[in-house]
Image (tube, rainbow, N blue to C red):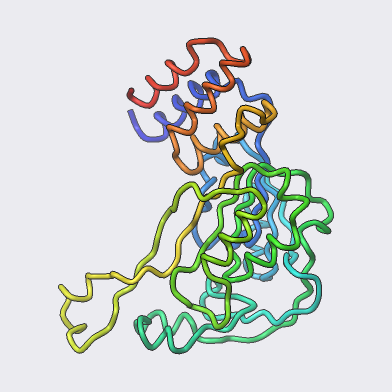
Length: 291
């Protein structure tokens, strides 16, 4: 069985078990398609809807020319209201309202990184708070990657975030940008808003340069954590009191987006206890997972 066939079977079986009545809504802030987003498979299976924001003109044009079924994008910047400087670098993935820290590039940046981190131009952008963003429905998941600007979105989007069950945010382990918020800053804000850290995804590390870095065996060692994605979930200790549709959305996201099978099964336990799902739903899902 090829991978696509397996995905189709998994989708059909899991959808049948979960009995998902509505498609979870994903808000993507910083939707620049440099890499596939973590929800790419779920979107390809048409099991979610995406409302995305991307202020970079080139990146926004790339999004506009995709197959836009279940996707809607706007060329807007999200964050603290007002005018901000947007630093556009050679690689659009580095673009940020913060300046890249030269000391960090000198410490871990290789020649390719230094070229990609070359500043092309600086533009002025108008940011709109997430809570004031027109055309944005209530969403289940906030996926955000805006190179240091995440904290300002959380701080100006508390009303919208209060309806979400999950946040996937890029976090910084090492200061790539000058004065940009760290993992600790984001963590404190999300904790205050009722989210708990669930897991890390796709941590990235870089090689620390030394006089021995000309050895291929040495440069293969990349021990310095740089950044990665952190999954935060609304406090699961109260999941028994959540609305049924939120539990189903979380189960779908845990299955398709951030691969937390044990969380899926816990969600199914709650749904079974409410008699929303049949008593054998958990066993069917466990067998799907190979248990």
